[in-house]
Length: 394
Image 1: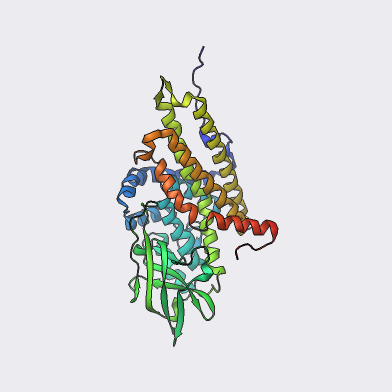
Image 2: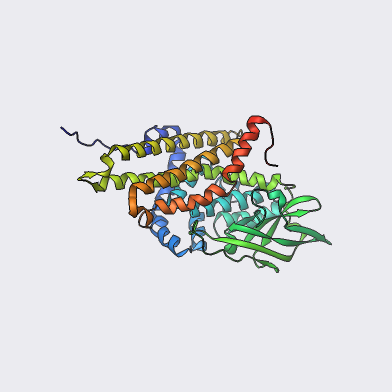
């Protein structure tokens, strides 16, 4: 006699992971999830299909939600824990990686660079309005010929009296064409320095990159600096050398450790729901052993990734997180997330390639997440150096 189905368990409930969160962390997660489901999810497939987003409106919405620079202290920022910030990233990326990218670049790259390395005047000028979503920021480090090797950047800044003259090109810059201020990193005689370049500065332009197959619900641009003249107070005084921009990247990579799991979770939830409703050979797709094998494997990897993310978050809150540990989290969680998205697509069959369901959209987005903020290969070498003490980059 065939047994009746039991009450399903949510994939993340398998390991009782909620018990590892505090009340405030659960409350922040619930608030961001509810707002994302209400204000973002109904529109994201259309934004992805058109390759356009209402960036200004979104920034104000996210600023009102309090997630822009939420892990920073002061200047209108919420000052939450790293874990709470990670959970917010997870909920945003469960809707779309492009939306989490907007928040990551705003808070963990542009705002963090100013908060960490800027003067008090720079912080007061930019951070409160960036936290509110009234100003948008971008982060110009990557160049057409300098991605994984930022030390090879060609963008340069030269003194002209008390001013600076910047020349160069940055590539694949999230928020670039809608940003009110760009944090641009350039070579100087003193080493790599960071500069704040307001939109509208003569010689500065940010043409948008079109025809993307990934992160279509996100603004991506090129930054062009053609004899851009900046005053002396445009320099970030606290950053000298590559440690400045690389420290900012570690902040953003931490958010990805959680965020990628949001995309994976959304795919898995979609696949489980679909498999239960889909009838194949007079039975639900979910009742077949091969289906359950796939779902079980994906749930295990999702749970392991969440345990890793929470552990790294606790280390970050304790001030003990190291760059190689962030590399472990980014490498593992993005790699497993994209594998989950692809496997879920197989369960949905032909329906999996449409925007009616989110799985292939997530998989396409994760192709970019796999590459940006350090490729899997680079993170593997960071881990390899930690294990062996040997430098394998050159």
